[in-house]
Length: 267
Length: 273
View 1 (cartoon, each protein chain N blue to C red):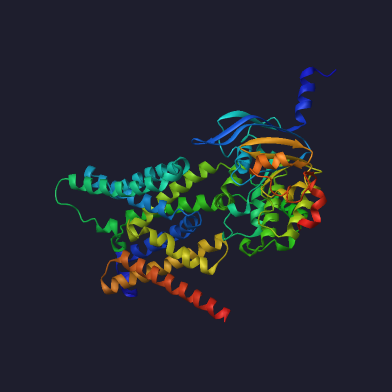
View 2: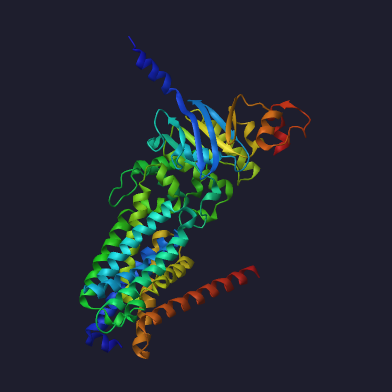
């Protein structure tokens, strides 16, 4: 016999992420207001929104990097900061110092560090194997010993994904993964994410509405408030809410369209 | 000078002090420059002057006072960096001046003739005593062990502290620890180049090393090497010409950096042609 609690637990365990009534303020400015969002395991969610709409803040709240005023966040039933190795995070390329003296391989290895500071720490053989696997997965194993200052935007981005993969996460969070890459790398990154989605839940945020909508499984929009759209159709109302004017959709003369059909015209 | 080196204890002490100071500023300088903490380190160094004054007033070793006050300043500045938001540089600027002002006040209150403080402000490597050396050795060893032992964590923290936090590394602990190490490094350097000139020894060897190497650890070794070269050159010049050793060391360091920088710019221009 399975008890009610066990059933409940089983049901909850399918939830990768559960956010309720999340409000984040910076001083008197509200960055996020009353955000609710539930993501099931295996989902591939794209969150779009204008710059300054609270996308990065939302990710950072999930990661426990910004404190929130009210609401609750549970990631696989754990609070932010208690998630340990459940989350892999891929920050914006522009938030990092590309001149820092470090090789690509050393960056990827840092994903293997744990919470316990051990004296005279050395990376283990297992750490190196996992790092090699991640490099192979994203396809940059040949660039292992390159200085990060010598990488292109796309290579740098894939390095950050590899670093997040060495954590062996169940949930992968990406902040603007295609902001600083060319069209070809963008395709590669999205097909990589598509493959990764077999093994993990993925949430990515971007201001690039065109880039994301043809690749992700579900969509949400964020601009202070978050609206979950489930399937990936975007209509006028959504865009108006986000950007204040009906750009793009009207220009194409199709009031209610799936962006996937326009894939070729984009890149 | 070589003959004098074997003859005089104070010259031997000076050479040992240069070596220790160079190791410490080689290691810490690279971290400070990469993490963009140069101004904060300046704040810690200058605040320590209050400790020197307090030592004179209450009758204990001024360098001990500098150590305690710079530790407190380091913890205060680390806290402000974490919680102060955009106003942190204002507060650090105030720390900087307030420490100096307190130093002057304490020394003014101390009975008797005012002592000569230029050796604390601008350093006097030729007056380093054996007990100074023991202090410097102890602090240098602590700095080395902590940096080398946790090197993987430092690298992760320096490159991307948010990611380090997310994988569970205690970055706030590392940050406070880093500021304590900076305070220790400052105390080691005070005897060699003085409070006012500390920043030059943190930055100049590192800057030259960054032209030579692109590896963090290698850069620390190069910075140490350049530090030794600068301080021994400066020491020799100061001994021969009878000028302030701190000033001589700093001028040598800055001059070499300028020459190296101009060299790099010129060779780049040649490449383009």
